[in-house]
Amino acid sequence: MINDIGLILPELVLFLGAMGLLMLGAFSSKDATRAVDFGAIILLLVATLLSLGQSQNGYATAFNGAFVVDGFAALMKALTFVATAIAILMSRDFMAREKLARFEFSVLLVLAATGMGMMISANDLIALYMGIELQSLALYVVAAINRDSLRSTEAGLKYFVLGALSSGLLLYGASLIYGFSGSTEFAEIAKAFQPVDGQLPIAMTIGLVFLIAGLAFKISAVPFHMWTPDVYEGAPTAVTAFFAAAPKLAGMAIFLRVMLTAFPDAIIAWQQIIIFVSFASMLLGAFAAIGQQNIKRLMAYSSIGHMGFALVGFAAGSQDGVSGVVLYMTLYAIMTLGTFACILSMRREGGMVERIDNLAGLSQTRPFMAACLAIMMFSLAGIPPMAGFFGKLFVFRAAIDAGLYGLSILGVLSSVVGAYYYLRIVKIMYIDAPSDDNYQPMPRELSILSGVMAGFALLFFVYPAPLIDLSNIAAAALLNGAGTDVVTGLISRP
Image (cartoon, rainbow, N blue to C red):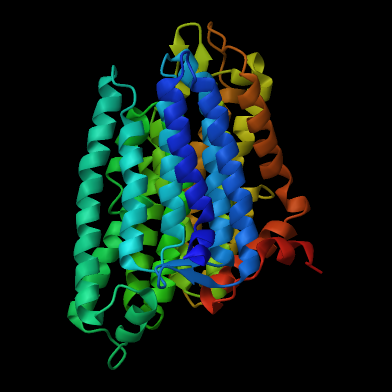
C-alpha cells in the first residue's frame, strides 16, 4: 500500500492541496483569491517535479495494475500540470478585471488537473472513467463560472449535456469490451482482442467504436466536436485558454495509451477509424474557420484541425508516430497558450473585444502584442522555420513511413487551406488602417508569457533536440513498457 501511495503522490498532493486551498478560501477572514491562485500554481509545479521524479522508478503499477507510472505518463503529466499552472497565471488579470475573481476557480483547475493525472496513468477501464469524470465535473463548473452571463451559462450547459452523452458512449463501449474480454485491465483486454482471419469479430468492433467515440469527444475530434465552438466562445476567455491546452494534452495521452496498450493487435480495426477522424477533423478545421469573425470561435476550429494533424501520427501506430504526436501536442499547447495570452490582452476602454476586425492596425498601436500574435499565427499555420512546422513534419513523416500517403497528402492540403485564416489575422494587424480606439497595454504577466512563448516558437529550430529526445523517450516507454527516466535520458543525451 505504501508503494501504491508513492506512485500516486503527484495526484495525492494535488487533491489534498486543493482541499487545503478550499478551506483557506472558505474560512479566511479576507479575500484569499490571490493566495489561493499562487498556492495552486505552487502545487502544480510540485506535482510536476514529483511526476518527473517518478520516471526514475521505471515501469511500475499500483492498485493491482489499475494505475501505471512510466516515462510516457511522467512527461505527459508534467506537461499537463505546467499548462494548468500557466493557465491560472494568465487568468489572474482577466478574472479581476471582469469581476470574476473567485478562489474556487483555481481550486477547480487543480482538481481538473488531478483528474487529468489519473487519466494519463490509467491502466484499467474503471480507473480511466474515474479520471475522466473527475476532470469533467470540474470543467463543467468553470465553463459556467460567470453566472451573470447567458453565454457562459449556455456554454456550461452545452458542455455538460454533450459531456454526459460522451460518457454514456464511453461506458457502453467499456461494458461491451469487458463482456468480451472478461477484464477491465488493458493487458488482459489486449489478450482477448485478437483478430480472426485479419479481422475483429463485429461485436468486438462495436465496443471499440463506442470507446473511441467517448475518447474522441475529449479531444474535440470530428464528428464529436459539436461542443467546441460554442463552449470556446461562451466561456470566459481565461477558461477557454485552459480548455484549449491542458485537457487536450491529457485527452490525447489517454487516447494513445488505450489504443496502443489495450488494442495493439487490433490496429487493423481502429486504424481505419482514426484515419477517418483525422481526415474529417483536418478538413472541418480548415474550412469552417474561414468565415469566423470571433477570434475565440476561430481558435475552436483551429483546435479541431490541430487534433486532426496530431491524429495523423496516431494513425501510423508506430513508435515514430507516437513520438510525433507527443512533440506535436507539446508544441500545440505552447502555441495555443501564447495565442490566448494575446487574446486575453485584447482590451479597449470599453472592455474586452473578441472580433478579429478589432485587431486592425494593431502593429501601429501595440507593436509587441502584434509581433507575438503574428509569430503564433505563423507557427500555428505550420510555416517554416516556426515550431509548428516541425510538429507537422514529424507526424507526416511517421504517416508516410507507415504507408499512409493519402492521409499525408490531405493533411498537407488542409494545412495550406488553414493557413489562410491565420495569415488573414496577420494582414489585418499589419496592413489594415488602425481604428480610433487604442488597445490598453498588455498586463505584465501576459506580456512576459506571450514573449517567452513567441520566442520559443520562433527559435525552436535552433536547438530542437531536447524536446525531440523527450518525445522519443516517452514513445519508447509507452510502446515497449520501458520506464526510462525522462530527466536522466535528457541529460545523458549524446
